Image: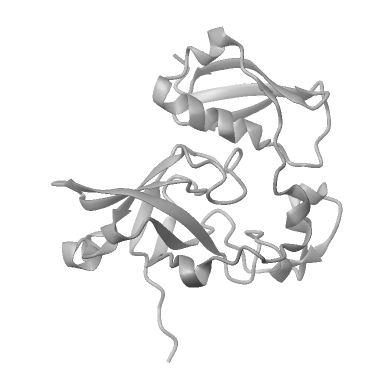
Length: 230
């Protein structure tokens, strides 16, 4: 008998679209997400003891990448988008089963009347509304492997872009969102095979539309506006 996978929760984040989401969890620790449980799973007993852990594993669905077909190879963005590697040697969302795995920091449990107990987490790399299949505690004594070899990912682990964010534009962003937005931009939201210095890119972050260019290795924010056009 094959068990049916259930959606137990959904996460609320500042990412309304895929463009701009960090490629790995924990890269932008400043990002805050709210894990809201589906009604059948809003039992405080299910979270008993969870506050004793600093980090959690989230098992979730690549909800924007569900497809019937699959390919045994993919082109990782950090390899320039022009080198094929095996899908199981990557964390690409285009997999036979669109399942993601993220390690996040548990900041607190928030008790609410409307949504029950909500988990507030840091460092999530998930689209707003992403379905969560399961939550498990992170165990440092078994889950951490400091001597691990990380294949081609080792070569891009410390990749960062210098960011020039004009003060008058940064002032338009609410203070609590500035650090996380800067970290997202430092990690270069562009597809890595894009190298057009004249092209202006746009991304939605929280309630903002942020536009930028990348020239000579520096990302410069060119304009910013509210996502609702105000």
